Length: 455
Image 1 (cartoon, rainbow, N blue to C red):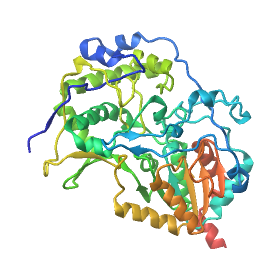
Image 2 (cartoon, rainbow, N blue to C red; image 1 turned 45 degrees about the vertical axis):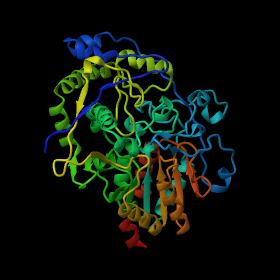
Image 3 (cartoon, rainbow, N blue to C red; image 1 turned 180 degrees about the horizontal axis):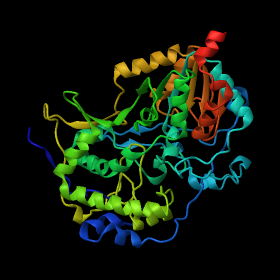
Image 4 (spheres, rainbow, N blue to C red; image 1 turned 120 degrees about the horizontal axis):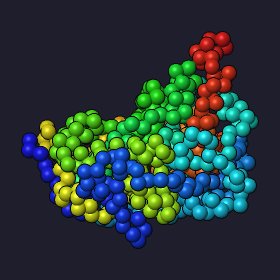
């Protein structure tokens, strides 16, 4: 089957900051023979960072928090007739408002050492809250865990709706309709995915993922349903995982459903785009030198975005896609040195369109997968939601189903969620901190099978 070229005349890898354009490091790499040491040497100083605080709702009972005023009422996202995703402004947390909050719980909070800027700033979990969480877990015979983007923020992957989330930088994810519509759209997607894959594939699980894997190993948690596409639960050693929205680690043919590992597909893209591959390699080498001097920057203000663009940083979105030098997926600036074409293959089996094995906005979850997740929700006696606003209905319906089956519902999520009114307990803190302390609690250090036998 011949390889399928796609004319991609707008830009191979691009960035747009509000009202101004910048080509920065990637263009310099493409046009020069300068080594990464010289390219990185131009950087000096530390970027100004802002610790966006969030309203901390830390309760252990439904009645005490359900009646509180909600600062963020999540609206409804929609897809237009031409396939564009329109996100309701209420679904985005205003960083400036969060920073200027007079809420005592949001004043004076600091991000713990070693926690990346992508994670929310919250109060630490209290001993009372931890005790309530322990009682909840040990009281369940069939605990189901549902995780969202907030579970991976401590792995340096931003969420969507938080103060440091993707939406706060103007990110608009490509919809299923847009991807399928034209080769140009697909070329644009694969070009950005090609550039960001090296970083996204290297991300490691954090304390939350490891704690959940340990809880499974000890019998205190059974299955995991995740909205995330990063496969960090797999890396941490978890089992019985349903990836509700699929995974970027696989590529699927839209015609014959043949599955290709993303690593193999990346090699095909490298072979078809050798100049871009060389430029990406030099960019990665320069980026690694920069990271030795300070961690990667996930900008949320115009000043930070401009600084990142000038320094040539790579900014990661939750799906691993990237714009160069700043990850703003819908903003383009032509980088002439990147060339006029980006090539990507068709399916080797049937010539069909290849797409990430991910449920894009505007797409539907495969019915067998949706039914399996629903069955787990209906058969559990406890549902622990970690790092999800449940704004997407495919996740919210699982919380509703669990409650309708008389299961207990606990939310471990920073910020307002769609299930606040039906939850039995809600705790707002870092998922990694709370779950790591939970997994180490003496009550959970004994395998559940021993507890059951003793009873």
